[in-house]
Image 1 (tube, helix red, strand yellow):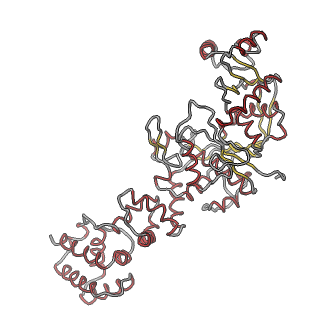
Image 2 (cartoon, one colour):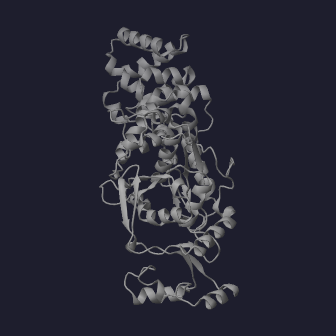
Image 3 (cartoon, one colour):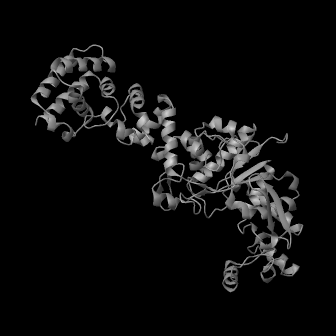
Length: 506
């Protein structure tokens, strides 16, 4: 690593939900920056106004906040290279596009959408490039005076890069090593659109230069764009300041065949977005990892292990540990298969790993969604302590803890009634009296006193323990029965025994 300060950026388009692959790109950017005491920049690439979606930028920012991947510079916090939205930098880009035209590296193209459509119909696999550029209406094929007239008349036009013929473009990728491209296979990409907005190709190069980005991490699907970007760095005179590139492996479908998509998640029953996204255009709601009950720590942990490992058997990493251990040379070239069962395992392990106070903020909304909002924090913390080892998703909390907040309305009578006797009814009436007189209300004393009563009355522990559990929770489930009783409190336990006895003896 040189003495130059590391600066990385995540540059999403505000067009919809944030795919877990996007969050992994953020994570690897963040880890690399923090590992090298660098700066992590969030830049919003909103140059394609036709695909812009209201609320998408806020959603992206909220996702990063939930994950704890806070940018050092962004539209929200500002920074020395503001503005950080490309739409607010629009005036910058034409200057560079015109400079490319002036030096013969780009040209004006006046083709209408109809012209292009006709050409695509006439020429199979048409590419606007060296093979066909002179067949089109542009400043390379038209006389100079006609070009000037078209420009003076404000004729709609785009600016395209002029890709050279018969050249090989090479660079060294931080993950893939030596990469080369034949320019004869690269088309003349649009750099500046008719509305004056830059395309991704121009904007990403100009902004990375102006914002002094030193390392660019992006998905491998952007690899085919690399030769155009390389040429722009060279043609603009900035080649020696070009960032080092790392093209991250794809996150694949569980069967390994192709990139994981939102459609795969819907088909296979798991989320692919960090947080739930409600599309304001279509009204479609796509559930996210947060809302389904994932902890941000687990979400980051599982993403960190998709295409990277530290060379040991360790699987659980906090964000700080990932920063400490991360190295780009441990990132795989091959795509990483997404395994939802493994993802849930990470979450279950993190639920066990965090303390009760850390889980409280996540548990509260999960219970509130089920109508339980009146629990005091100290009570909730005790509930969490008793059931957290049973949870896979945070949203499982209701299934495993509802009986701490309301009495059972139904009982597993098949577990109790076949062996129920009048003697057992009498036993539990006696137990109610014992409980009313109990002063030391804790699990250990409750268990000791109950077992002493059973011995005194000639019952085996198994004869009464299951019925007592069913009385408290309605069935054969839950943590240690005396831990449940201790938390419910004297009046509630007595009320539940009385209510259950009526059902058992009906």
